[in-house]
Image (cartoon, rainbow, N blue to C red):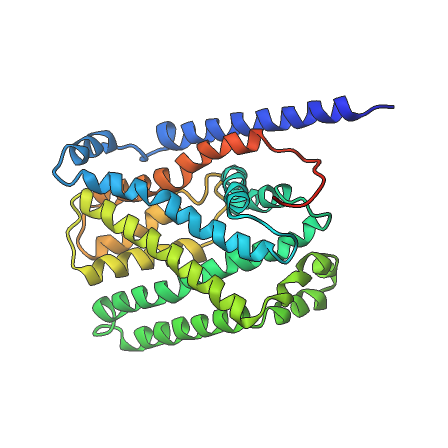
Length: 329
């Protein structure tokens, strides 16, 4: 029995469903979510008519740079499985971004990148993807710990010195533990192997232990580079929306926001939309800033870095081919 037509139909159906669900969630997030667009249209219009409107264009111009860092990371990570050109790595990142957009905690990112590989050991890429995401988390925790330290010293040290000291020690220990795990990936694999229900995943994670300290360092620097792009984009948008602070306060507020967004568990289907916004409004509220301006900057950052690339990534999703032969170009 020839099952190829049936398989092709299911593949086309899956692609159509991904496109429809992505567009639906974009509509829900932008036009119907409560408080999302409260007075935002007017604020955006005023911002784009201001002398600083070039900041919006500059922020948008940094989108391919942002995802270029991620593509370079995936290119280095995927070399353990097969040769990958930078363009193929970029395409895989875009597919993963689009599929991750419609799944909780961006789990679809794994599927997207795995599907773009030609190797027969595709599932072993799960460990490589995890390492890449963990590197980005380490960069976020390191920078975010410094940012939150500013808030601890500025708003808590005089009134609650004991609590502030405890928070400082906690952040220091967390940063140290993250670095220790990053440079001892084999230990993470050993922990998974020691847990009986998780042992079946060890073959897919074993690749984590093959990355050297030098490779980890390169990945961490790339993660910090991508983080810096995010940081600059957010600050540019805050300036555009008339949030006026000192350079230290900008950096502390943004890095603290990214930290809280990363460590707070999320079950959102729309790429953690809401967690970052709440974190930003809280931290910048401590600095005396209007919530709506901060919310506008945060939503604009999400639209530029997640929503727009996710729509563009639909093109690569529609061109996916599950059955491939040969090696990477």
